[in-house]
Length: 85
Image 1 (cartoon, one colour):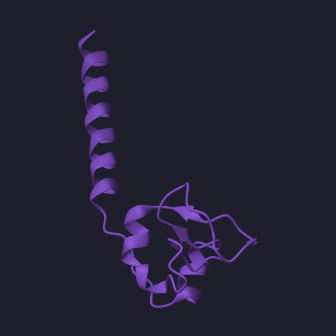
Image 2: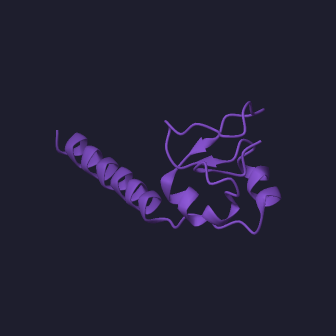
C-alpha cells in the first residue's frame, strides 16, 4: 500500500513540475512572418473568436494570446492575427 501511495505522489510531483515549467516558458518572438509561418503555418491569433479581415485563408491560425503579444509587430492589418496565410 505504501509503495502505491509513494508512486502516486512521485507521479503527481513529476506531472506538476512539467505543467509549471510549460506555463512559465516565455513566448518566442520571431524575426518575421517567414520564420513564424515555418512553425505556425496559419499564423497566430490572439483569441479563438477573432475574425480575419483579409477574407479566406489557407490555414487555420494557432490561438495563443502570449505568442500573439510577443509577435504583435507582425500583424500589419491589426485584425489580431499575426502572419495569417
